[in-house]
Length: 367
Image (cartoon, helix red, strand yellow):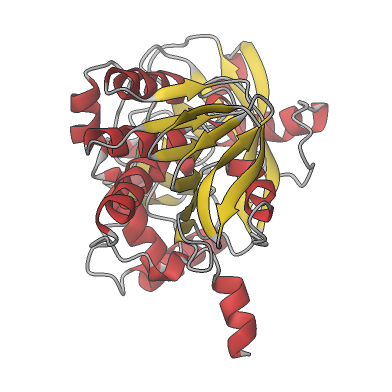
């Protein structure tokens, strides 16, 4: 097979996670090639709700991982020197019933085993003061000062631009067909156009990560989930902070969503999905009755079987690393830093043991 080139690391996937991995590696002097079956940032990262979300990530060690990553956004965006509409004013999960409030108190109690957790339950009065424009039906909320949102397309574009300045090569619209190994160790990536030699390969392929993992004989428990999102025409700024299911960006557009559907790789928008999203959003923010729809889209997100990220090396396959999660935007800065640590030094100070990509297989062995 024709050899297209030689590099230190091949990253499979050019979404938020893959471009972050490439950028962090290039900052540390590594030669990196990113390969993607589509365009840079054209997959999940272009069709996401784009929250930076911390407070509801359970269990607590998942929340802590998300918190570490959320705190990395401001310095990272300063490095990128681009307007990516980063806004981290805090975030809310609304409670519309007494049962919602009880569940909120229970979640905060569970999360508070971590000294880092800053979430708390707000009563109705404080919720309406912090977030004007909510329905009188809202009885309270869970509030976290660490949460926010970003323009995911601007963000990934800025990451890719910065990575290119550091010498990263992007091979878009190039299908990966295999992972080359010798004596068990990774030696390169095979594509439809030829071979790219490299001693390290990072699987950041999002909803397609399971197929890439199979190329080295690994069963990765990650499956695709469809998420539908609606965007309105600009309206007067109403929401001060993003909420689970409703956010308003700096230009006044409302983003409404999102569904979680087992639809395989079908990225269709459905009438039922739109109805459910609108019904839920208007119930929380009545002014949305007057909104006019700009567009509706669906993205295919990666969902690990237990909901937790898959992050780290695969010991049985030296040179092969996995960086996949459902919250790719939130965790992208941290995923990039961790993989760069592991490839450059063989270790990381960030605790990633609970996110071992092979944890289901290891659990089966213990059982």
